[in-house]
Image (cartoon, rainbow, N blue to C red):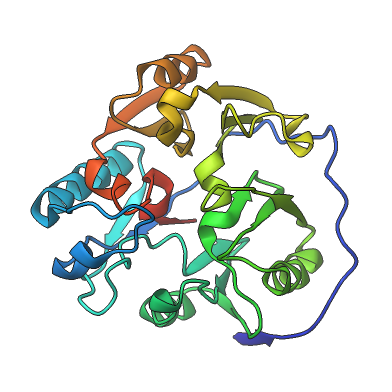
Length: 276
């Protein structure tokens, strides 16, 4: 069933408080899309030359890491029309067996939602966000029983309100979160399960993070604030020993993955998969 959610506003959900979910992140499936030749034109705040062949090899290593966690991984075809389409987390998300089709905030990425819409419609109830909403998956921190959503250049208040309208009947609190200078919320903080967040040191003191156990990422390892927790595993970008050691100290098995060519397009490990 397809629902079109527009203008509906619900009362803002309160901060979930001290009842932080202590369960691991229990994902079973992942959709991924390797970068195509057009990836050389991916959006970047500070453009650098991208080696597409290397990016494709790194993506294959990332897929191997996903599979090592036990996920069922489905590979989609590369997109030549949308350079950023490998960052498949952004155009859609799955919450309690409901697929939410986002409206992308970056104009060049608007068509990416249509690339995954039919795949998700075949499997889930589907909700399509409508104008004037914009919302990208990279701004949504899923902590298991609540969502925190960043207000950014890519995600606006209308997008947050429409997401809240979808989630409220399902008992999921949606709380808007300040992001500041970071591109997406998940650039600054990610959730690895068991009540633990991995947060950039310039973001870790946000009041709404006070109930979580925090692994604080030093500025020198800022890129490693974006990691991906799946059960007992955490996929991390290679080359960040201080953050990796902290994650291991919490009992997780760390899967380092080379990410240099995705870093060049402001993408991290969470960006490359759509999980449920």
